[in-house]
Amino acid sequence: MKKLLLAFVILFGIQGFALSQKSDASIQELASQSTAQLTAKYHLNQSQSDRLQQVQLRKLKNLGSIQGLKESAPEQYQAKLKNIQQGTLGSIRRLLQTQEQIALFDQTQATVRQLKAAKQKELLTQGIKPAAIEVALLDIYQE
Image (cartoon, rainbow, N blue to C red; front, side, top):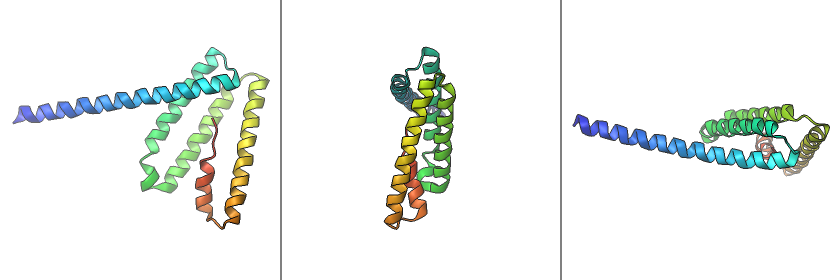
C-alpha cells in the first residue's frame, strides 16, 4: 500500500514538473516573440535585446502569478496588473540608449495616452461606471 501511494506521489510530481516545464517553455517562446518584435521596432543592439528578454520574461511570469486574482479579487488584480505594466514600461525605457529609440518610445506612449483618453471619453458618454472604465483602460497597453 505504501509503495502504491509513493508511486502516485511520484507520478503526480513528475506530471507537475512536466507541466511546469511546458509552462516555462511557452513563457520563453512568448518572451522571445515579444523581444524580437520590440528589438526590430526600436533597433536594439544585442545587449539591449538580451536585457529586454529578461524584462519580458519577468513581465510574463508576473502576469502568470496574478491570474488567479482575476476572478477572486478583481480590484487587487487590476492594481497588480497596472503595476506590472508600469514596471515593464519603466524597464524598457531605461534600456533605450539612443535619441531615436527614446523618441519612438515616447511617441508610442503618447499614442497610448490618446487612445486611453478617447476610450475614457467614449465610455463616460455611455454612462459606464468608473470602475469598469478603469478595467477597459488597462486593456489599452503597448510594449
